[in-house]
Length: 242
Image (cartoon, rainbow, N blue to C red; front, side, top):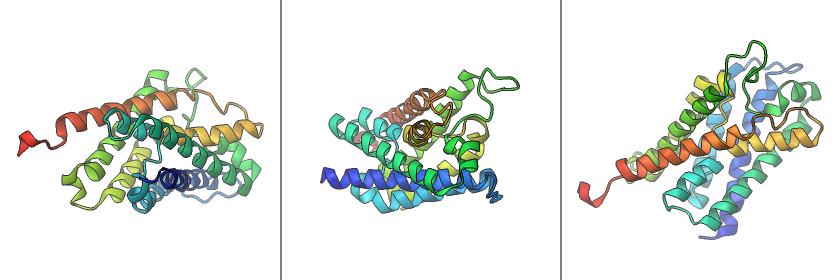
């Protein structure tokens, strides 16, 4: 494995996902008002991830998500030092995507959407907010659990790989996850997807960029790790199954 090629692939693959997702969110804001709504946002993320998985899966595995990398780490499918490098590459790709969107889109749209940082519509604890911290953590856990299960089932398990829908299946999972949870938590499922726009928004003077940010690391990583361990240790075909 050529590590440098893998890292470039991880950075570009994460850029695919984050640029498409952030741009779709910003396009729904004034003064653009694309009218895409949450369906358009979900499709932008899902389609971009599907293309990234198909384009870079053969190079790096196309994790494009620190939570996914952690899932592969705990199941022994990637070494610790390589996992750290993967995560750094993903954060770089996400940050470049966020910077590009900040540069391309009107300031009014960037400000209104906080540069597309995945967050609840109303922050827990504020007036009228029904999303609590446990709900936020629980939803992000479940959404990422489903995503990691889809990754193992379609792109890791040889029985699933034989169907040859890895990229499509993974992209569709992100799409339905956003449709199901986007209005609740922002449906990040991906610490890099949250980190990139938060970093750029904070650096350019935005307020509240890192509010609840730890939740978007802890819950997705926990969901991915649990899903990976369950699939790897229970559902994965073994010699005893033969």
